[in-house]
Image (cartoon, rainbow, N blue to C red):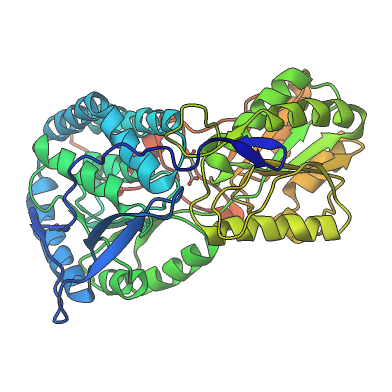
Length: 502
Ligand code: SIN
């Protein structure tokens, strides 16, 4: 079956989903899979397929009592795990990488089932997520300190790095595996133990991954998983416990601010990977074909449901018509549908609510004077949204200020390099920016001027396990990936000793 969704083709939305692998759906606390502590019968959280709305599974719904039990377990395990050798931890992470690659298809099936992205993208996520395991396995044995002679020659100053302590990791629904591995791998590499709270929408991948870690020999209590429909009380309870020393969160800026406030009481180390509002600049001397290629990746990877998705296309007026025409062709060629249909290039959005939010931003942009170059049908109660391309968008509208988190591409025409860079940084967010030009000096000017933590030059993708991922301004604190990723879970201790007399 296929029909039209605006200008793009709708693949069969109910193509048969493969059977899910067996997944433990209880809480993982101290190496035991347990039912939640409750006096009111079995408490469950239902996980839905966003393509069909069908129920996929029921998982345990943790309470604050389970939060207490998880903190007990993670604290006890820290005592031994933090003293294990780096080589031992490295070997476990490497074994986890190997096992994940062997089971890549199984994991991809679970990701597509609960998150919706096309199977090929889920496989790409398994490779991307796996790279954090391999990268941090290698980093585990490279944690370094320093020595320095005091300027007066009287002492030698050494620094050593030690694990921060038990950590709470809160992960989002858009990359159900990669955001989990991007946090667990550096934490374990550094010698920290963790409680993971995956997103309510996509807990199955995290549960399957926790089981994989058990099978390769990660000891009980080192990784604990709490799935819950009550994130606020459960998370507060954990953050209020002085045994927890670290919080790592990926999600919206609003929730991030609240978590930062909650972390202040315990003076926790925090890593905050928050929302973006990425500018994608096309200068007048850009290679337009390559800019369009980058734009498709930067906009449509994960259906635009990513904090590094291009949010504002800032295009020099002299090349705007050509860019728009070619970009529109590529957007019209997308096939919207179930992630399990091999024809699909754009899956469902995670929920009707998210789809409606994106659609509302489009409506208000059009009301503000934007013209629609590529349109999408918007059916009631559907999670599907085809790509939408808007031209001449008002720079002060809601769509310019908010993270769209969907396949909507607004274009803002500008007249000069200065204007492009001004518009690009005119936002409270500062995660990533992209710029296209054939002039190396201009690219470096743009990279220096852009107010963000990451810049893609003539590239529409910056995500990589070996690179420091993170933002400035309202987009967060800290970095994930690269050697910086391990440092987020390490404290520097300075030791002073009299300089040995000769
Ligand atoms: C995110 O959207 O939070 C992460 C995206 C990425 O790692 O590429």
